[in-house]
Length: 440
Image 1 (cartoon, rainbow, N blue to C red):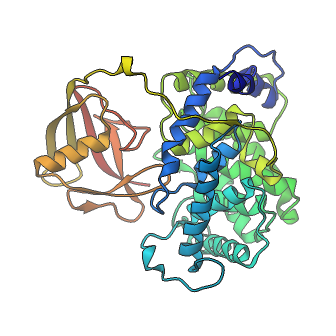
Image 2: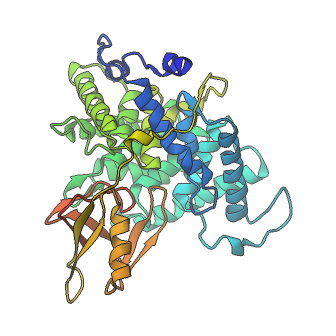
Image 3: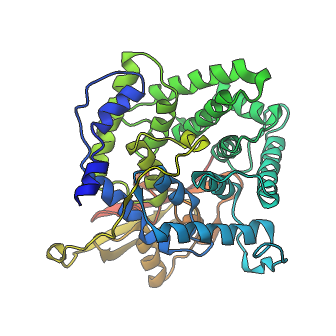
């Protein structure tokens, strides 16, 4: 443990965050190395899931941008990513032969592809081969399709989201691949005209991802005709994110804060307010980590770089020889094992007729997904999910599917949106959970 402590003590990590955000302070707060280690350990079981449905390139990126490594497990995970993504995105197996893509009923999304390109760059690989060029072309085709969906008059919206649109531009940029002015222009317009407002709230993680993409374009001097707008957009994103800081210190919410900090760390600006905001966000993050708020692998993979003073922009010139400490699997403390109590959770669905309401009994510590499964086992309730990088999300409840630009929102009754998905949120005894169709 001593070498790990030596490397992961992260001397004054949150004080250093403030300095990186533009406010020089003396290091005051230190992150416990064991807490950081536990975050990395949460990713290890996920790295054993190597089917296409569960593969998550973000896990690999997060580890490569941290001070921890998973050794041969990490190497095998990258191999699995390459094998599955090559098979499903390019329709080939091995180096040449045509492959039957019927084994890939769920083709990786454009967001998966963008993160996969970031994972390859994290391994110091450039897209220079024929296969790499085909992957780049697929991502560019996606951006063109999204650009057309937005429309020349900007009255439409992307088929997916501006988050994935931004992620696509960033992934191409870190590989030093240019995108057309018209593609970048659509994202600039969205930032300039507040198109990332959903249900009255700013999408901080989308703004941060767009900001990271703009900084990358600016650093490589790409899209020179748009440079004045790109420079202005970076400042606009910074001001929006700072304005979205809550009294607790989070930028938007605790799960959008890591990406927001990645952006702020990549775009330092002088000013006491900026440094103080970063320090306050760091303090809130520390408390949330110690409370066990970060369990989702995608969220952890976005947080680990921040704790190591890294961002996605470090992938432009990654240091693949930097020393990283080996992660060991967590050891369960049998003295802490206890028999959980049984709790009651009430499930309400108001978006169907007649409205649904059912109380189920589950073990304390169970997830909301366990509640849905129990309700389905009892009878009178059905639901369907679809896998995503952040876990399963609801697509249908009681036979009612989410339509175009709709989604099933999870709420703590009556109107408090949950920040976690069905696999991560753990209801408390007596809690009422409401499922509601909303438009975005």
